[in-house]
Image (cartoon, rainbow, N blue to C red; front, side, top):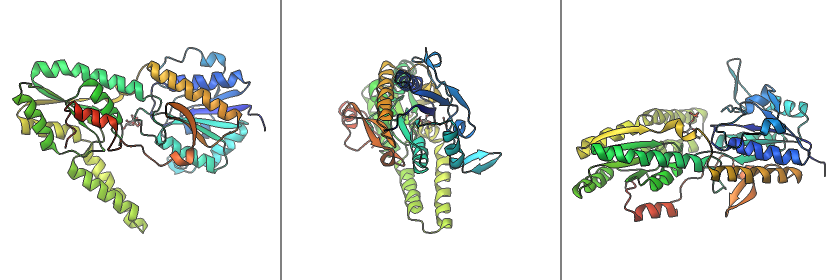
Length: 374
Ligand code: F6P
């Protein structure tokens, strides 16, 4: 078996706490085995532009606790990258630079988009291993991902703090939580922070049911409510429109039909961008209570990783180096049953892990009388 001597590493997609801990884990474990490590800046663009930096012992020192990524990140797709104002397929250039740098393998740290991009490089013949990273916790075949625990902690603390101000002013506070099209972050932080209403994309809501839950609290003497709403949560009506457009796109025969369905989805997304504000106004009208909106936003992705994320990043990163040594490529290091295991990138790419209807967190939320919008 040819020994792996040089590897590249990059971080792609949205940043998340714990990325540096993972870079450090891969780097230190690799250096320990005599493997040279080269970092590429700003995601896949760094490989296209050959923006490489050697990751030696000094470069890896002191980064365990730091938020963001020392390598920088980006959302560029290798097969559709904007170069000189034009969208171009750069997978060939990436393969060329991979060889120019005499890499034996490439480690990509990322979420859903990164896994689709990593698979394209696998299909181009590159030896790739990925680590799951996203605050959204929506990567298929892994129980968790780097960044989720920290973000859930930040969102929980925010919901905690909103209680005293909502209580003092007898208001509804609608707190928008990130998560893209999945509700893990809102559900986890909502339960941990004691939100009275939790809305997730997996359960399209009925605003009248939410209003009734808030009115019921008022009847029992509690004149404030906290609503944790996932950024991707939709009303039942909008949920149906999304499902119809997505179905039309999937069934579309010709290009024109596909483009029309894609346009319908874009229009729905544009309407969705004001959803939390709209929901807040509707709740004011339906309950007679004053409502305010707090969009937690990027603060959920910032700052130092939690102990759990540092530990996870270190376990995933060091397992990655074992796979590199065994030349077990085309794999994502996942967490299953609480332990790290390799799963094929091909089985992960293009899939989204949503909250299943029978998930125990949903059951727990219902048992403490949390309104889930239905
Ligand atoms: O995927 C992580 C995430 O923070 C999502 O929760 C959010 O929808 C998205 O990234 C925001 O993307 P961007 O950083 O490109 O604005």
